[in-house]
Amino acid sequence: MMNIKSGFVALAGKPNVGKSTFINTVLGRKVVIVSDKPQTTRNRINCIYTDKDAQIVFVDTPGIHKPLHRLGEYMVRAAVQALKGVDIVLFMLDAADGFTKTDEQVAKIVNESRTKTIIAVNKIDVAGEEKAKSVGELAKSMVENAVSVHYISALKGIGVFELLDRIKEELPEGPQYYPEDMITDRPLSFMAAEIIREKIFHLTRQEVPHSTAVVIEEIKDRPNGVLYIRANIYVERDSQKGILIGKNGSMIKKIGTLAREEIEFLVGRKVFLDLNVKVKEKWREKDFIILQEIGLK
Ligand code: GDP
Ligand code: K
Ligand code: MG
Image (cartoon, rainbow, N blue to C red; front, top):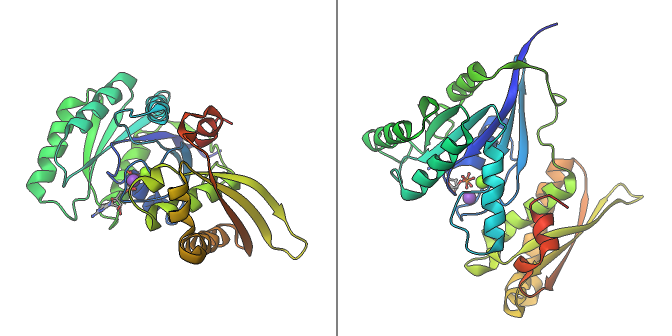
């Protein structure tokens, strides 16, 4: 029997350093949502990379940040949990940003996890070499269990596969946990909700994206082969509902069309997407939605 390298790698790093972009580049297709707005990734998603001699399960964690309301606290806790009990922490920093206070906070949490850590300084395509180096060296001096520092561009694919090789070197020998064609361990309802949420992030601004929760109510096969998906989009105020629906329904139509096309790509068949916008005051305080959001219900 052939031995492969396998294990779990948790991505740590403040919002917007490029964690999701890195995973998407490694997997070669879009599985986790990317946005230039922080806090896009509210949920833990395991993404699975498999080749002939390794299987790496990446855990994409919520960005570590100051808790502003209850959802924030859940997110922080989820992030800390994600770093514990994995084989390697991949600590990502933004070369263009410099080493910030938030990076320092992340470094503390990484140290708390006592897990072997590989440092990746991302976005070298837009930062000077000297600045990138200083970020990498500061990070290395702060992280007790750092084994190496890599300079990459997740977006352009620079240095990504060398980093992947390094991760493989550090992983233990082990079993293939998942079938080789499986790229995420989350169900379709979860992926569909993430895709709808991403379109809302891209098409609306200010407080609207952060006040939005997407809940899939129903998924069923129709006799004609179409996959029917019904989702509720919760916002906190009537004004936000108005923005999401748009003039003569133009905004919700746009969100629906873009989301449907992407879900169709994911499932490889025709989809009918039924979106309903509902107002639920202070949904962030309501546990049932929070628990659903972080995948515990
Ligand atoms: P996350 O919050 O850490 O998951 O970050 P995302 O992957 O969502 O990326 C945040 C933003 O940074 C997006 O606009 C990405 O396109 C951008 N980004 C990610 N990696 C790179 C990179 O290597 N170079 C540049 N220039 N931008 C990047
Ligand atoms: K983001
Ligand atoms: Mg992300």
